[in-house]
Length: 259
Image (tube, rainbow, N blue to C red; front, side):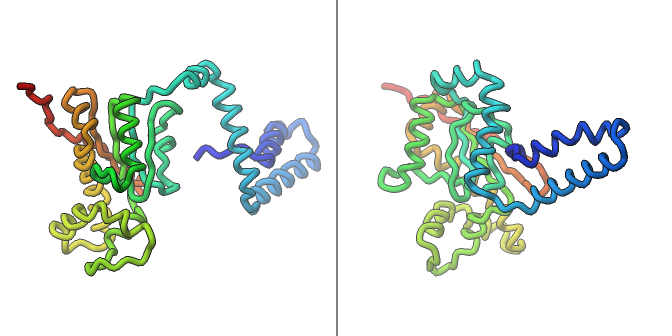
């Protein structure tokens, strides 16, 4: 992960040239520098995260290595965004699409939620997700929608663990993951003999397929697909083994015949 440069990191980097040129130093000075470097590294490892400093360091790193380094690119972004992708991904802190797929600012319009779910069109519920889809497809005219699942997803495990009697233990989580109950039913039917961990892996992929199907319930998605202006894709990031699976959702939707 590309972490922000801290003050200790700066100090350590400043000492490295001296360490590489130890021939020009006496043994005592070289030993002191090595000891100081080791102490700085140890302090960096043991130092508790100061949220304000972490945010400041993160922005300074971004400003130096990105914003100031590519001024023309960020000037262009300031004029407007034209992303090619709408990406649905989990809120899990380990699966940021910007890092996993190396998306640059302006490349992907994103919606992240528990278990990367896309509910079916419903103007009375889940309007936040609906607004993302409507804006991305109707106004930004994205060319691709990608739904990404991932390994060891807590939301998927919560869904797989839901009691059959429908009782809930959370205020919001259980109701949200029930969006993917049809995917859970398929897993329980087709892989009833699998272990819980295996069923969660299957469910992680099947919930992506269900979300792709649910996208068809949005009229602007259907219209864009019919006009060959939009593609739907599913993905699965396995952060245990460092692999990424990608597949296309081929819904052969044709424009309506006007009579």
